[in-house]
Length: 369
Image (cartoon, rainbow, N blue to C red):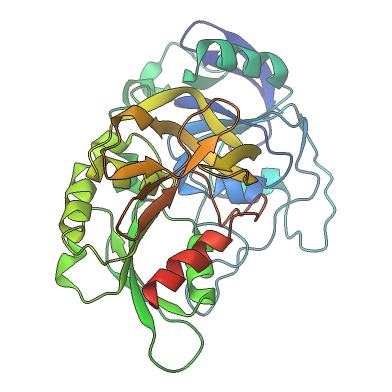
């Protein structure tokens, strides 16, 4: 294993060993506190442009499942067609793995997809730095290469994260239709692909609706459909004004059901007039507690986002639907009269708890009314 160094833009340096593909990269350094689920996290498009630090120390012990595609075009065990994270940073990589569904090691998968992996890093100290300072840009350099060549490290392009429209990089480029396995007529849902996870589409198909997946900036308002879904995605929602304008057009139909998840929560909020701010270090874990506003119902949720809706900017016709029990930040909104709502967390999980998957049932019930 070659010696590598993670260098943060505040000058902090963390030494480690390479176990993935050997190339220098740069991106926004974030941490995820989940204990499992690295195949799903790495293939989540919301991690585009980021160096993902896993706080759980032992990573790789159950390998990686096979990459297989279902007849509907969705991957069986992954959340997209490839790894989207810039790199993965762990404390202790397990070369030996054992699992009934494992097809290869994490290191071999990273090498095949040309994604760097670092082990031997003091991830506790790195997480402390990120919690105190906030997420920051960083780069991975190989110690036996000339570190002064910033062009090779990609720092000139990748050290600007907030201004990059990562949604445009990960969204589909053409309209894709997914039809449920059952025969007969189906309700049609337009899914705005801002970087959608495959399990969102699976959850919709399982509820017997046809999914029309469109690019993030596609004007779907000329299509015939019964409901609108806005997906998760990476980066700054303020770079996605075209999506916001199309949502506002759709809102002209006040009876149209609308449901947004993660980035979808932020874009729906912006369409309703609210503003977004960047969290200090984001929510990336399987154990974020949220409370449904106006009730004592609390849920443990899977989350992956760096931005949040400012509750104080919601219009008079809107109200928070969920609140984060750790920091009081917004976790979803709803319209007071129209069938429009959203969640900042991931009801579809993959990976993580499925406590809130019932939100898909509520969305589909609105379509069938």
